[in-house]
Length: 246
Image (cartoon, rainbow, N blue to C red; front, side, top):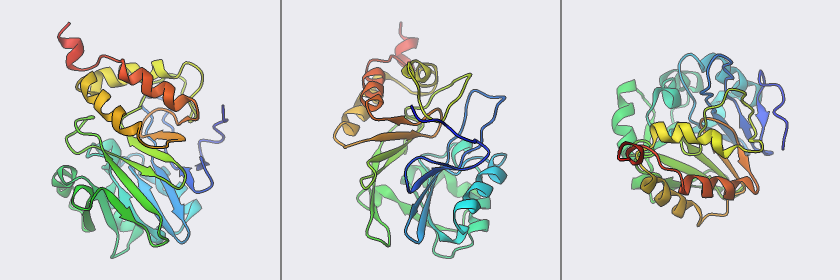
C-alpha cells in the first residue's frame, strides 16, 4: 500500500497524474480532483466546489501554469464535482478551453454561466484526442448517479477516473485504499446509487478495459489487485431501490 504523503500538497499517483484535492478533516466525504499532465497540455478532472477552489487551484499552480489546461472533464453535474467551474475558467483564461461532459450534464451545468466550448462526449464517439495524440476514452455510467454520468479511461496509464462510482465514506481517510477497503464503499453506494442492476451494467463495461487503477471522486485510489476486488464487491452490493423493496 502506498503512503499518502502530505495532503497539503499535490500528490503524484503516476508520473503524469496528480491528486490536487482538498482534505477536509471534519467530513467523511473527501473530494478528489485530479490533474493529468500530457507534455505541454493538462486535463483537470472534476475540479470541485467553491469552498475547495483556493486549495485545489494552489495545488494546480504548483504543478503547471493554469493556461496549460486545455480540457476540464465533469463526470456529472453535482456541485462538489464542478461547482467551481466558472471560477476555474477565469483562472485558466484560455479561449480554446473545452468542458467535456455528457450532453445531459451540459444541459444542467450551462446554468453555471460557463463561457468555454462545450464538448459533449456522446456526440463525439466517447473519445477525445489530445495534442500529443494521446486519446481519452469516456465510458457511459448512466444513472450512477445521474443520467449523464461518465467515467474517463486513459489507456496510456490504464487509469480510470470514475466519478462517483467506487466512491467511499470513511472516518480515517487515506488517498490510497488499504485492506478491507470495499466495505467503505457500501454506505455511499447504497445511499446514492439507484440499484444494483445499474452497478452491474457499469461493471460489465469496465471489465472490458485493462485497468491498473481507479481514481474515484470520493474515497481512495484503488490499485492493482484491488480493482478486481472492487468490481466483485459492487456487483453484489444491493443499493437504492433494492433496499427499499426489501
